[in-house]
Length: 238
Length: 183
Image (cartoon, rainbow over all chains, first blue to last red; front, side, top):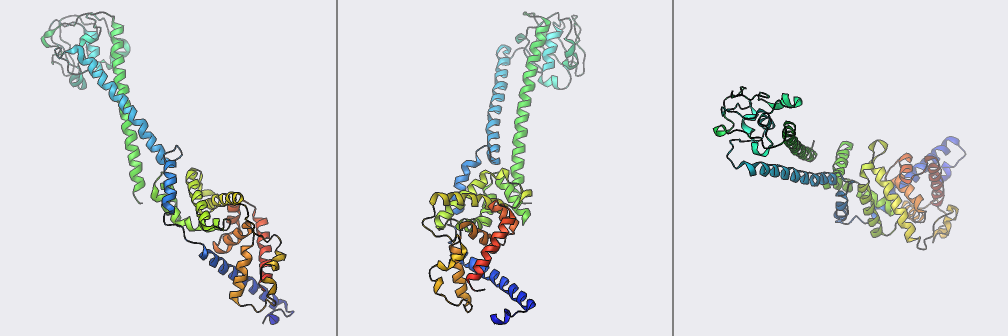
């Protein structure tokens, strides 16, 4: 057979060479498959052992999940700090209030009204519209109130939400939602020190703290929702 | 399938165990066999395969599907680890076929006489013994080419060499093996 293929016929020789090439390929495949069959299968716990080794890695900064977890650990203290600030502010406001001044909130605009409107002989003051009505009420005694405050700081005027700057007469302030008494019994605000600028500054400070606290809480909530959404999306087979 | 694999890779990147479990199920055996071309002891080879998957997970962020398949990528990692492990183990007195012309020196080969009439099973046995004596790089080359069915380009990526020399080397091995088994 081989002699036949090796006869000096170019065409036949090429055919034979091609067949030999093919034969060698087949033999190599067969030999390598047999060799592979002799290699024992992986241990049953192969994957478990790999996973046990990569779990610690997944908590490292390189693992995506690790990053997610770290974010949660970073978020938690942020929430804690924000909550502490809120609680601290609450007690700060509550302590001097004693529940007798008729304010039921601590809105920035209401504080500014107190700081700028001063004494109201008629004992009746308007409540700023909307939010101020329900959240207004930083106790005036905690602020360096100015009975004869001439005018609010110009930059605050737009946000103050009410109050007629510099009004010293006995007329009630008129605004939207007008009529709700802000101070029971018409108790006058007393000047307890400070100046108009510092009163406004304190009000601004409280307002800023409020805004920062709100922002921190919103950021924490948004981050939590994003992380959960990603995890849910990842778990959902598409 | 590629879509599914990419999703599993993404899941593994997020640290989800099932994603990486899929990749280990799909490629664990192939990686083990690749390592076995270099590390003869099956247990040791499994350890190296394990190291390869751990290393791959650690570097998963760096895997770019646009530059090659996951199979090629983890194959390269496994190949490097296997070579390092083999260097650490030493050759353990194994005789390599540095010069394939000396294949006849293999036990029993010099008494075979006329190879023309060998049966296929005899040729296979002969081939197996010859492959056993190849250098690990040559054995890996044959394994990737004929068992895994990889292209020369993919093999070059796994073994980190150029395709030209790889093709020449493959041709040389084939000629010698062909002569050995009387084809």
